[in-house]
Image (cartoon, rainbow, N blue to C red):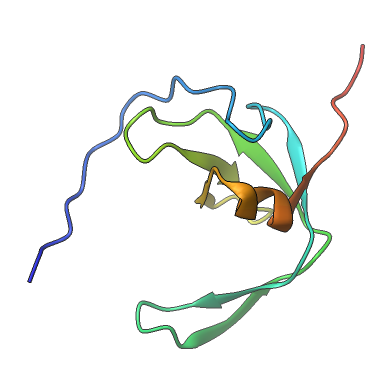
Length: 96
């Protein structure tokens, strides 16, 4: 049996992600996400379609994931792959 390996992340240098999101972008959740515990059982918490999350600077350690701030202020990561674009819509960037 393999053990989980954890790395302490102290630097967040990634500001541009593979799927086009950039640190500071706002993204809209396109579908409900049911939060599950470590056994896969629903916790009763749901993030609803339409919520706006904020893209944060990310860590360069593999795998490079998109770092996000949920509406409740908690940090979350999401794979920087096609599932990101099926789950989130990148909102237009503010122009000055």
